[in-house]
Image (tube, rainbow, N blue to C red; front, side, top):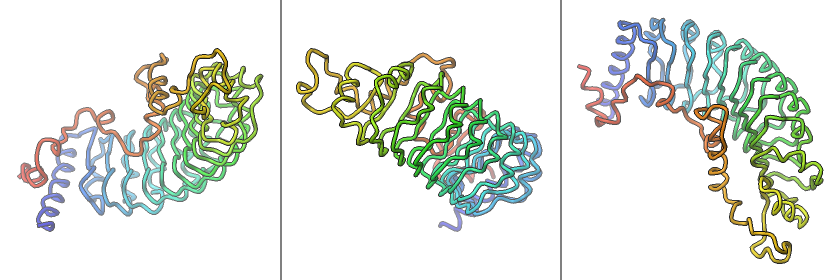
Amino acid sequence: MEKVCQFFRNNYVLANCEDAIYKKSFSLNLSHYQMSQVPEIIEQCETLMKLFLNQNNLTKIPSSIGNLMRLQVLTLDYNKLDEFPSCICRLVRLKFLNVSCNNITRLPPELGYLTQLETFWCNNTGLLELPAEIRNCERLETLGVRGNPLKKLPESIGALTSLRWFTAEGCQLTEVPLTFALLSSLVHLNLKGNHLRRLPRMLMAMQKLRFVFLNENHIDEQPTRAQLEELRTLHILNLSKNPVSFHPDLQRMALRQTNLYVDLPQDLADICDGLSSRGSMNSQEQQEEQVRGVPQENDSSDWANSVRTSELDTTDESSLENNIEDLSVMLPEMSRFVTTF
């Protein structure tokens, strides 16, 4: 039965490609087809601007993909790639790239050729370092490298002056480059679950920064009252589940400074006299509500839901691919493929 289903599945994929060629389509969705290889006919889809290959079993990408020079969106997340496809670096018009949840431990220096890139997801790939050449991706607004064994970030990351949303949650960072202070557009910074030992000093210089997640690190150096005063422009500064979070002085500050989140004791009477309890506001759910409730420059931006989107790994085709009908929602597996014959 599986072989029969695979036969129809492969033919359905080919039919989609042929249809895209005939209609000179701008978008092609080949996600969720359990493909082990990309059909060669794909190189004839010269008009494509969006190509969805996520959620398959791909182990490599044909070099001919690099000839689709109009591509602006490419999704490869949740495949079985064991290296970054070098052909991608020829797609100089690319604006959105997702390679999350593969086995990509290294990014080539040629990544810097993607100077039009605005969104890059490389979460949970085993990535060991970011190349210094990422400095050339000056239009990057969203960068995600969550869940990788990164021990440091390149100094060149400070050149990404358009960056507004950055997550390196669940990595192994022990410090943040001083050049972070140059990220003048950064709104959301998620460094949860790393190995930081102190509050990064450059945060005070980042005037547009609003959401900072430093929870679950190793921070044991207590920030001064003056430093916390400088960070009052932040909507959220999360220091919970750090050693410093249990310091009584910092807990008192958290009760007065509503943007500061630490671990508060169940009984606040011993550290607070006459102050209203704010212990119930330390939950992740309520932090999400606070983030979503803050007016943004652009309400449709993904950083308006910064906490929730920090957990994303896969591509949401509903926003990137508005005109492709997903038959899998309406039809069972077999009939999905049979309907094209």
